[in-house]
Length: 295
Image 1: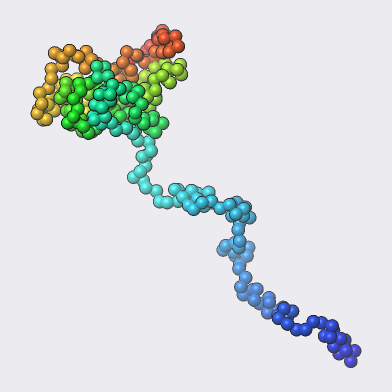
Image 2: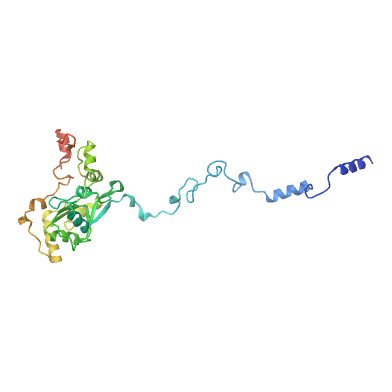
């Protein structure tokens, strides 16, 4: 009886049975945990919650497309036909209409040869060698209104109408390649001369440009002069204009001026050093340097 009385006394002191103080049997709780539990250790296929390290634990997840350590542009399939596209040479387009307008405004002098430096000195075109701009491409826009007689040097021409518009007025056009070091110097001569560096020697065209710059039809600077004269005559016959005689032209000396393939400025040879402060030009005297800069 003592045990019965003891149990009744315990029930008398305990609170009344309710939903908040009842509990299932331990066997039932254990069975439920085993039924719904996720595999752990070696058998686990994924983890619960955030990682123990990294952005997930610190709640600083990256923006969309930049998960973990691989950026989004590397996750997408590669497009191999764009391979090396960022290494291609870029030529800033400039039209005949723009050249004519710059001449009319006095920003270009038609009585002197026009090259990359002259066009950059107008400060009207966003030319930036750091964006792989290797020069200018002359387009045929405004060919019907172009009336100037000029000797112009550009880096690329695709339309023969552009060449015809210049030669019809008695002018001359040349396409010439410059390497990136020469382009940097020609785009800002004052900055280059202030750096105290000698004038660089222009490099040779890459393999994929040799055919273009040796073609007389493109007026390449490496083309045969006799073939260029023949192409001038053919183009005049094709477009129906009479080719002016350069021998009788009063501007013959200006129109016939051409640079050496290694030269980047008229009147200045590679290897010379221009001192703007003292207004002097220093020329190399060592035979090895003279041989190196010689074309």
